[in-house]
Length: 213
Ligand code: MG
Ligand code: ZN
Image 1 (cartoon, rainbow, N blue to C red):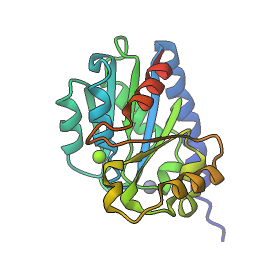
Image 2 (cartoon, helix red, strand yellow):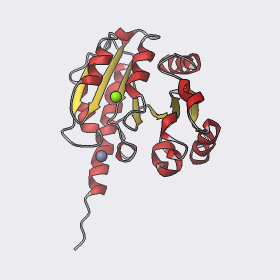
Image 3 (cartoon, protein in one colour):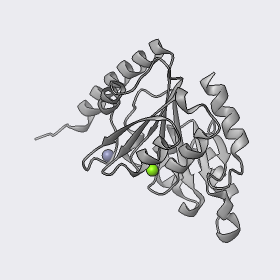
Image 4 (cartoon, rainbow, N blue to C red):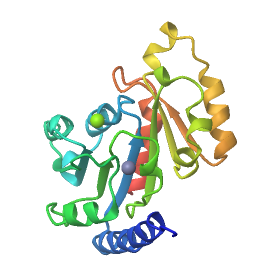
């Protein structure tokens, strides 16, 4: 007996992702999918980024297995937020995004950021209809995440290396991380920064502003 389950699920996901992309294209709204391990600083990146942009033009979809802690943090920054609690699932899929869009006002938005569930495995497999995929990696995660989770790095266009304020306290080779990541994906745009101190933010903000425009 052959059991084929994953392929049809991924194929169905692809076509819903295309629908999501089409809906947002018609509205002129960009969609960004942020992936990364738990604790890499996805929410902190969003919080700090919102201080540089116009929050009223931004929608956020927060994916978590449970709780609304992260959604509350970005809501405080003035953005419209929809929370998805996956009740155990370790990734978001395109159907969840399609449903979330019904709870967001789209006509005044320029960009929607999705914070995916903290996980480097299946979020890489599930396209959500995004125009841009960003992977957030904290310096505390060590040097070998790119080789251990190649699809996450291969399928992203931007790598944020977060928490560079900790560099003096860690035995980690940031140059080595960038080299490994570029081996997997030579086109990856890399922004080392600190969402706490704001160090390194100017390049990232310039990039995302240009992306929105
Ligand atoms: Mg978070
Ligand atoms: Zn999963």
